Image (cartoon, rainbow, N blue to C red; front, side):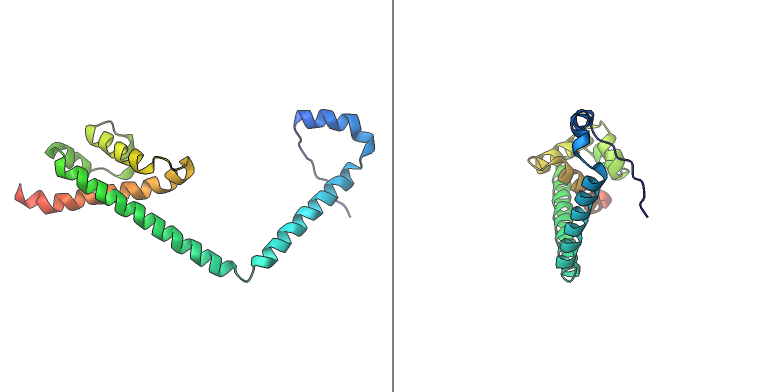
Amino acid sequence: MSKRVTLSIPDALYRKLEEWRDSFNLSRVFQDALAEMIRRKETLMERFHEDLPQIIARLRQEKREAEGSWEKLGHDRGLLWARSAHWLDLKKTLSCDAHSLLGDTSPFSDAFRKSLEEETAGIDREDRADFAGTFTDGWLAGVREFWTMVEDKL
């Protein structure tokens, strides 16, 4: 038994199809193309099936390492900023989370965004978005670590 499938194609391709419609059995063309694509995917999955757990473990480890380095980088930049920050900016920063920090327009937020932009310059937008949160968490942790060192001495 066959099942009906509805397809959408761009207007330009449809116009060309109209010119050649009598030359093709569209159902057969679609079935053959789809069968070939599925065969390729299944072959690929079979080749990687045994190695897939090791590949996933390696990629997870690489992700943890990358995220860890972004958090450390953010932490170091937060510590650096905190050393020369004004007391009021430090106090405001202590009540921030990553979301509010990115949306704020105060001088400390400008300094944070400048740090983030400098560290992510040359990195494509998608990768930058992946690690911006990790960098931000590290930056805030660095500022908070600095504050704990000086708070009781003020």
